[in-house]
Image 1 (spheres, rainbow, N blue to C red):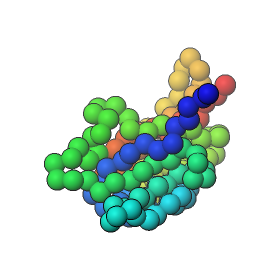
Image 2 (cartoon, one colour):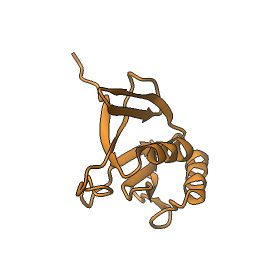
Image 3 (cartoon, rainbow, N blue to C red):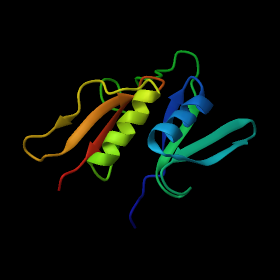
Image 4 (tube, rainbow, N blue to C red):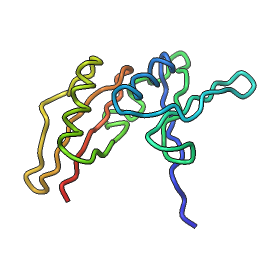
Length: 131
């Protein structure tokens, strides 16, 4: 048996707006939006319902919105190539989530990456792996 990642939970001040950001910035789809006994289940991701994605929850009072991972990135997204990275960064800029610092390239591996913040302040790493 091999376990697969299903969802990772993401606290948001406004789950609908956060889902919209992930759709517009990264091309995610709404995989499910419903509720069970009044509890909203909002799942977004790049694949199908059975693939890995985000489960976006309304943040309760005092929750660590934007700092769920402490000082570390919340999410790493792998992109196919430099053109896709440039396009995603442009969409992020238009959404007010421009890179935290200039695009970087590893001297050792030639991987390219940038850090952006989602609308709640979580750091998302965008990476193109060279090899």
